[in-house]
Amino acid sequence: MSGRRRILPRLVAAVLLSVALVAGLGWYTLLRPTGTTADKLVVEPGTPTGVILERLKDEGLLPSVLAARLYLELRAARREPRFGHYRFDPGMRPIDVLEQILAGGSESIELTIIEGLDADAIVAQCVAVGLGDADAWQRALGRTDLLAALAPRAQGLEGFLFPETYRFSKGMPAERVAKHMVDRFRRVWLEETAAAPDPWGTPLEVVTLASLVEAETALPEERPRIAAVFLNRLNRGMLLQCDPTVVYALKRMGIWEGRLLRTHWQVDHPYNTYRYPGLPPGPIGSPGRAALRAALSPAATNELYFVARPGGGHAFSRTLAEHNRAVARLRRARR
Image (cartoon, rainbow, N blue to C red; front, side, top):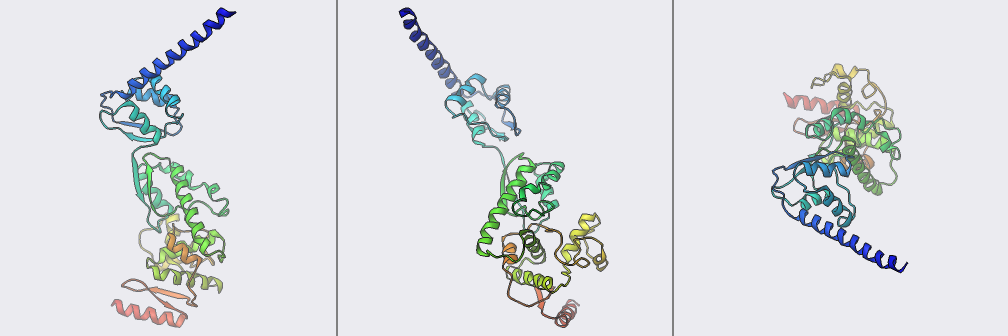
């Protein structure tokens, strides 16, 4: 019995020494540049760590899978590799390659979504830079569960992909890009509603109105007045007669040719506010912060009409007679 007690500590010591030697050797191999010419690696979402390490070894970026596993266990606090498109500088040490993948230091894409773009335009922009494909985006746009708490009656993510400049990892899936944009919208929405705690309608209604405002004007001083005109018309039971809603309807019908004609006002589509009363069923584009603010806090005015001026901006009127005179003046100015 006493002999066994003497052997056990020696065995433990031998095992510990072996582990220390292996770990030390592994650490040494990770510190030496491999001299490989491989400089790129794509890590797809959900790829197991073992597969990633084997690929790194196959590409000559890692001398030993065992050494890498020991590093992950003992020195990297069991962090997991992150997906993305990675580019490595020539002569990088294996340990630096590992740390880059653990930190998510992948190639990134800067993407600017401008105010007023509809979902189709945003999708085209994302697909063009490699952020998902068209099929994945169609599935992502249907993720109404992302809006369940905010806008349960929303038909999709139209209007809730917040316009801003983003930086995404190259190759990020469409669903994650969409969720990031929706999350950003929610943060902006909370900030803006904190200053306007008693909105006149549901979030879906407010965002829909904001999208009309965004489509009608780019002038900051006009946005609250445009919002007020539309709300005044809604309160009086008047048709909104918003041209951008007709354009949106034509796009959804696949017949938009780049020019709006008076005959298009008769198109039978629920987004056509020349035929259907009230707000359209949902937003027609992505409103920015200023348009959301205007929709939440419209101007105090009883104006009911506006018409575009040739040099920019709009002429506002309270009555149809005033509006008709403004239209006549603007037509004469165009001659």
